[in-house]
Amino acid sequence: MKLEHNPWPTELAQHYRDKGYWRDEPLTRGLDWQRRHRPDAIGLICGNRQFRYADIDGLSSNLAARLSANGLGHGDTALVQLPNVAEFYLVFLALLKIGVAPVNALFSHRKLELSGYAQQLQPRLLIAARRHELFASEDFIAELTGISPHLSQVLLLDETAPERSLAHWLETPPLGAVPIYFPTPADQVAFFQLSGGSTGVPKLIPRTHNDYDYSVRASADICGLGPHTRFLCALPAPHNFVLSSPGALGVFHAGGCVVMAPSPEPQTCFQIIERRGVTMAALVPPAVMLWLQVAERTPGAPLRSLEVLQVGGACFAESLARRVPATLGCTLQQVFGMAEGLVNYTRLDDDPERVFTTQGRPISPDDEIRIVDDQRREVADGETGMLATRGPYTFRGYYRSPEHNARVFDAQGFYYSGDLVQRTPEGYLRVVGRVKDQINRGGEKIAAEEIESLLLRHPAVTHAALVAMDDALMGEKSCAFLVTNTTDLRPATLRRHLLDLGVAAYKVPDRFRFIDAMPLTAVGKIDKRRLRNELALRSAPAA
Ligand code: J2J
Image (cartoon, rainbow, N blue to C red; front, side, top):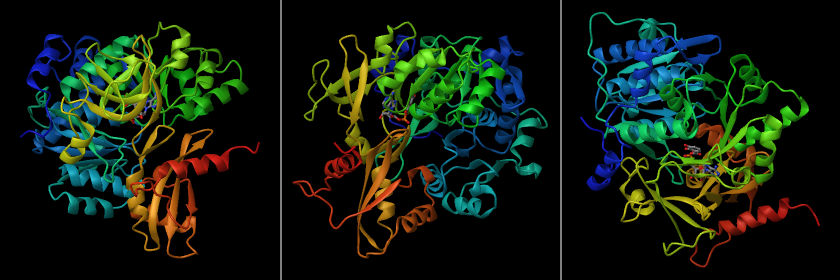
């Protein structure tokens, strides 16, 4: 059985194959090569645990075989939520091997997000962690079974009962030979990536083996990965940046080693970098700011092995970018990417000025970029416009979302990312703003509409608008403007209301402002620009 996705038109697909971008091989190809040629090389480090490529392959095969013996395979989906631990990759690879398509939720996701994914994908398999508040008891698992009646298999990290213990399923080979290594065809859905979103319900992005594998291979090449690479995964492991740009999959492709960190917190990361000889790390801008502060306070900081720091996910101020090489003693690489596809990198041999002032150029010569005005007419180089793109690893549609797809794709299949960008004559992009109704809270994306509709579920709230406000550390934080039918509603009550509905904590507004009436535009929509201006005026220092 196939999972639906919008395929590329035949002639483009043929072109991508002719160019060698699409190789009709599974995403597990890199791991398979390492297993055969370098089984004893260390591919993954998590705390005190080290995994050779033979171990990564063996453990993931055990799990794959057991799941397949239990009847899981093509057409099935899985809901996975794990923290930054080695098991994240072992599970991902196991599922790819048997053609089960997972969605990897962030560990910060809560009831609302997980229920939403379960609703959309109807998973047969759940893999989660007892240490997460939702899975400390059985209640939420029962709820998920109500949402997805086919959910028949649950495996948990930190579980003692062997029949449900993820560790047991990874470590114990199945009895008898079971056919595994049967990934979905390379032009079919391998897994679902999470979209940052700008709509009420978070959308899922189908990624195929062919498209994702190409982005991983080409990224590994651009970033000079090899067996010497030791990559620190300090951002949430499911995030597209640290999974594929070039991320852990790029490292496995190149035969390097992924080193897990629980979070980007500098003290912990610096220790891990020193202990494990990390050569490359990927961070969002607020984390870079904290790393710079600590490194400046403690000169001679233990970052000697660090060669490249990648920064992406949100706007990185030029003034901070300029401090990276001298303070952290490494090369800076800016990365502007999206889980939907297109990824841009500054190149490692680019002139430093270009690295400080742009967010890079696309991976592929066949990434088609259009920068357009409101009428979707192309603008000249240097002018600001909306980014539209299509190419060999940019998706062609969100999962089961025809109406939304009709809004964000044009007739030629170009995807409108909602970013405002400028292009230099050399083809480098600069991100200067956005048109999508989203808050980018230090790389974590919040869809305004999702939070507004949750706020409106409170009986005292009659109008709600979520807007971005500037923040020195996070770049942006969120502020909810509210019109209410009572005078005694408190921010704490609304925070509680949102958390009780089960939304991830990072989406809860940082600030609440109660107003008498919403300002409206000429066509009667809430005037968010005015709300944002009002916030900017209030936070501006007095002249
Ligand atoms: C400004 N905005 C940026 C940047 C992403 C690599 C790196 C990042 C992501 C990612 C990714 C930005 N400057 N350098 O998937 O593979 C904003 C844009 C973009 C959105 C995508 C990768 N880098 N952004 O951040 O799917 O608005 O992917 O459209 O989470 O983040 O968010 P996401």
